[in-house]
Image (cartoon, rainbow, N blue to C red; front, side, top):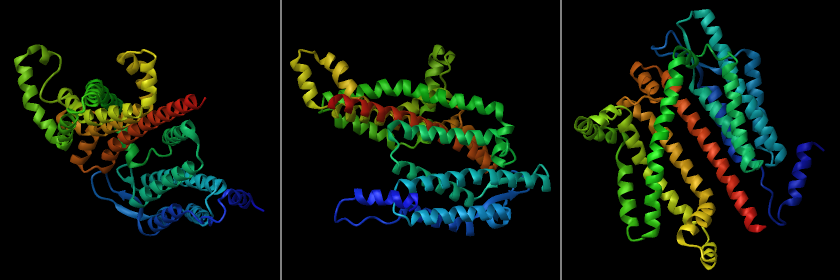
Length: 410
């Protein structure tokens, strides 16, 4: 009996009596079909004579050497066979291993193709990821995430796995085998500026949250304490969310320009109609609604019995808030903070339109030059920052929830 069969037998014994055992992994099957279609019909890489002109899509069967293409087909066949097996720990481990091998194999294969193109066509030639690569890579990551989730790694090991995956991607980039790809060449040409723009992006996010968190927290507490004003508060905050970000940045230019002209101290402090000031204010305004909603939801999750017990012990309202409600609401508050932080990191990209800098500078510069890989340089980095923030806060929220659950049951 194989390992997979043995594990399936254990799962069969644990299945409820009279209920048919599920067969196959439908999500994995759909993803395998998508990957097979991308391999057969979509371009794996795009080869262009330079960074501006449009390139020619090259399918995987033509771009990859015979041995590498055969390995790709074997991995897809292995994932397809795994999709037909009833989900279990063994099948999930196999799917995770094959998906990880596929993802990093795709990266290195694309890097090797780019190196060959440069040697054959000169340094002006550009090799970019094609639609087929993105479909294959995205599907491989989805398979990996689904398999790891089925393994139930726990509140800390799950996010730790994401950190390890990001670290492995960074190690692949640092290895040098991807340096000839167009995306990496855009990065190498702007290496010094890249670090500066990341710091500026983070500065915009931190300054916006420094305004939004206390303000939104106060509005949330007010809405919870005074139920009559809650519709008015959230009505105004909902209205702010409907204003397009570009329009809000533009609306702030006039008032801030007037304030800077009327008060020289504000102008000396850097307040003007364009730049950091309107960007921070706009980002803070957008963050108010999820912050206030998160505060209301967090304190609503506190059991009334705990509050009544605290009152019975003679604690004041302030003591109940600080010593009872806040610690119990902290996991939900962190979950709300995660939403606010990820949203603000994404919206900060648009701030480059008014001269605030950040990763959006690469995005809009790339759009102006029709340089897709320069757009990706800014966009993918912003996604990576948002993902890292999401992972850290998700782990912290899950860990706190586990601790609180353990404290209640002990």
